[in-house]
Length: 183
Image (cartoon, rainbow, N blue to C red):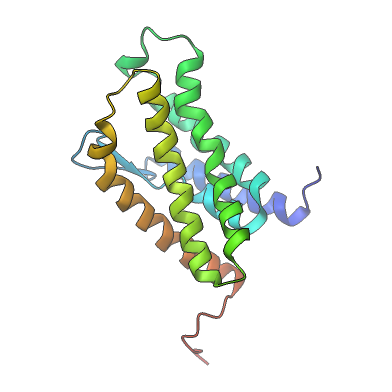
């Protein structure tokens, strides 16, 4: 597998954005529900995936995964668990966000590129939510009711990811949205 210079540059840029979001805390914001925080940390992985493919999406997702692991490994329900449990719950789902987004985008972009971008962002976000909560429920760390409690936040994160992804990628690729020109 060989990455083009463009793919490396896009990956580097998205890694830089993800790192800034992680280090400054701007990638997380408080919400009043069971999770206590919503995030946009997954968006650079989605953008990397739709711009340059699943490998770049996966590479950028590593930053979110590492940050999530460092940020949340100390939660009480990980205390008596084997070392692989927090890795599975906190790291692995983040690796797949950009991969899913890239595959959705590639599959749908010929029909309507803006819709493909929005759906890629929403399904990439949903991948994160479903896998993190799904692994936690499967391993007995959280009750299955957590899905209902987290649903409003998941919907909010999906919409936010779609808006940001469409805005950034449409501008980046100079996609004609049919809204005319400013010239």
